[in-house]
Length: 406
Image 1 (cartoon, one colour):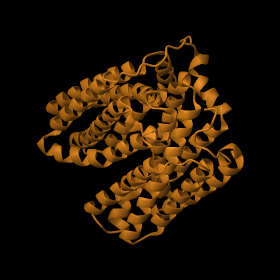
Image 2 (cartoon, one colour):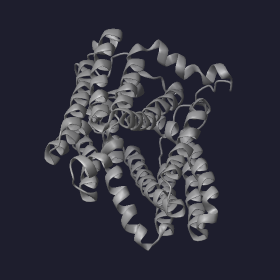
Image 3 (tube, one colour):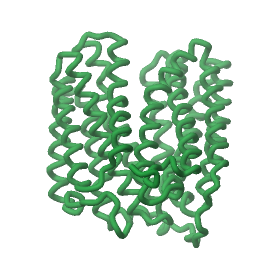
């Protein structure tokens, strides 16, 4: 790979990457501490579920508005203000931890506030990234940014769990400092986008991202393929059941299994950064999702810990290929003036697939049993791949990841 194709050749991308690492670590640490805090307050699994719901609902309800805001105003400042607001929310969580159970409803209120902040920061920062690197370096930038998130998914929970020994306030305090650092990193970015004509704040303008996706079968096919694959393949939600009842490993095994998916994704992200996908990108995406489905089936029927671990590693690697191609297609095919709105819709699609995928797996397991539900999910993923290959020929036949006209 030439230095020209390396995202890190850009000073502003290096600063952006620092911001992403800090915010991802802070978020993962905070999620762990928040879960423990609520469970200590209530002893209720249902109360934990409400935390997830409180986090996701703002993203769902604000998607059209947040995407339009990202396309009308300075995305850098949107990220700065949102990370500052999240840091203030972290300070509020410190106060809740000191007060204890009487502050439970305040915890939910702050969680909703954090969800609103992230609903604006996510599309703004996603749309900002492509403006910081040359066009040919975009796949490399996406690969490294995704690996940063996956790395934080491993390090963050472990770090949060260790620091929780000193109390939840310690975790929230350090996470808040990370968000402040993330905001200052965005402030240090020098790149300023060319001024563009702002569209009026109308419903038609807000819906433009959805209309754009409908008119671009490649983007719609890539996003919806990931949506249904993750929706049907939410085996990760049942890992505690497998660790406890099927593989008989205990808590340590659960930790290893949960980390395996992220480890596979990180290794594949590093490989893609060194050897990016250049040709046959559509077929590679379909094949990677098919491999994802096969590994779900293998994991579902396995009673051997090491086979299950290998299946999860491959699952994470194959999912990383799909994410890499999808994000590159979305960012490269979308005009800069619409990146915020399209990124917001994409965030809702992927967020919904994760949340609803876990819900679907839980309901299927309760109705049919753990192993049948996971296997059926894997088979469903393979069926989706076959249908998408038929109904989205433009995705199937997509050759170059970065088209000449993009």
